[in-house]
Amino acid sequence: MKIRRYPVAVILTISGYFLATLLNVILPQYADIKTKTYRLWILMVNRNDFYRGVVILLAIGLLIKGLISRNDPKRRSKYIKDAPLQFALGIGLFLWDFLGTKTQIFVQPFFPGPAQILESFLQEGGFIFNNTLYSLRLYLFGFLLGAAFGIGTGILIGWFPKVYYWVHPVLHITGIIPAVAWMPFALTLIPTAFWAAVFLIVICVWFPVASVTAQGIAGTPKVLLEAARTLGGNTAYQLFHVAIPNALPQIFSGLSTANAFAFTTLVMAEMMGQPGGLGYYINLAKVWSSYYKVFAAILIMAVLFSLITELLNQIQNRVLRWQKGLLKTEE
Amino acid sequence: MKEETILQINHVDRVYEDGDTRVQALSDVNLKVRRGEFISLIGSSGCGKTTTLRLIAGLDQPQSGEIFLDGEEIRGTDPRRGYVFQQGALFNWLTVEDNIAAGLKARHVYRKNRHRIQEYIDMTGLSGFEKAYPHQISGGMAQRVAIARALVNDPEILLLDEPMGALDSFTRANLQDQLLELQKKKNTTMILVTHDVDEAIYLSDRIVIMTPRPGKIAQIIDVEIPRPRQRGGTEFLMLRRKLLEKFNLASADPQPEYNI
Ligand SMILES: Nc1ncnc2c1ncn2[C@@H]1O[C@H](COP(=O)(O)OP(=O)(O)OP(=O)(O)O)[C@@H](O)[C@H]1O
Ligand SMILES: [Mg+2]
Image 1: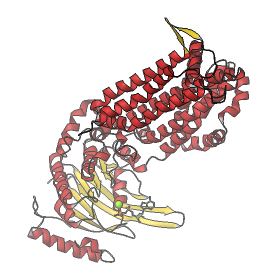
Image 2: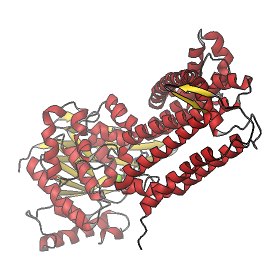
Image 3: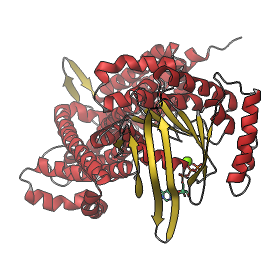
Image 4: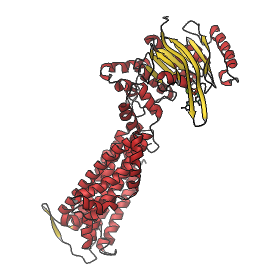
């Protein structure tokens, strides 16, 4: 008999999550904690309802993904490959729920269960949302400005030997200092806390981007510039149509590094005196020992940062599509 | 054939100095090239073939002597002097057609001349690969892209530095015929650096033999075999033998690589 692997994989993927939901319904609450009911739009829900809803939505999402990927061989095989892992995640979710919330065998309040973490959103979803927006805005200003400055100075340093001579040492010295070390300085010199934090992120993005951009520009093979010259390209053509496109792979690797730095600096800056943001929210929650809220903020960071990283990767793949098939990684 | 001189090289010297070492790459080089002529430069490694081409291209300056194109002294690069590099030197981030269009775009004449792109793609047999990137095509195709890229600027003279060095003999013969065809169509003057005596005889009106240390022109041989030439023809083989003999005399030690 021929086993139809794909339907099995889809069922396996979602069954873990359904099991977690089912067990959450069936098992009683052994440990003694109060269950509060909140108003969510037109529904009255408690944390368990909300938790089940989220898990079911996740399972439905994976089911839809399974149906969409049905006819794409590449996605299909990836889906089949991921199925056991997804199942294990579902079971893991159940265990976590059981040990964290149901029985509270985990030490409380440090290791809450998933339903308790999600309860933060029922309690103060709007507040969390606003803090997320604050972080996002901070990130966008800091990263985009830093990337623009970094690419700009990198090009100047890489192209003009004079600029290299004078600016490169400055870049080198400031580059090895962690950006947050400038915090007290930034807070006194820059009138608003928001722009002080932007300043720190700009600095931490600027250094890696500028230094790899400079390397990429300076490392342009001479023969390519000579080819451009014999074709009638002036200096501007050689810079903008040869040196910069040739350096783009390096510029993007600088941007990826800078992206990770920016997340770190962002959270640290927020924990050191910002009127908002996820880092600020974590600080606030910590004061009240509301560790489930800390976890909620961490959860959002994980989702937000991976979305941003994924977006950057997508842009990179689009811009560097001429490299496709050239690198070992994509086969 | 018209006897009009297009290129004139007078008493050119080029010395490379690097600390204590001093290399006389070229010493008193003299050459006159007629419009529409096909010239080959041959000689052992390090005899100054690339240096000669770079001086004509304006990528490098002689210490003494002068070079004239159309009676005008050469200063710097000019799209009228096309160059095909030994390593191809394609722009990896551009498709085949964008590589070929690079010269037109660099000179800001793309709008008016965009039809020429397809013309040269067809002429060099690259149809169907317009949207391919350099790493997706073969070495022979990459060299044809490099040739088309130089030709699209409609240069008066095309300088080719061993464009077929890395190709197998079949692809090479193919490309040689395409080169002759292109030259006939546009009457472009061509100077080709090669290590291959057969290639030089098959293509050239004249063959310039160079010798190293210091790099200079040892002899210039007229190739009077009527075209189209037969690679195995009697005249061809006679000239080949004569050339190999002269060449072995001209160079200090016999170079087995020329006795194919
Ligand atoms: N930029 C440079 N700096 C120092 N020496 C150089 C430079 N370019 C060429 N030379 C020297 O000049 C001489 C001639 O070099 P050239 O490249 O013209 O030789 P070639 O005939 O093209 O050799 P090949 O057949 O190997 O390409 C060589 O001895 C080489 O070492
Ligand atoms: Mg050479």
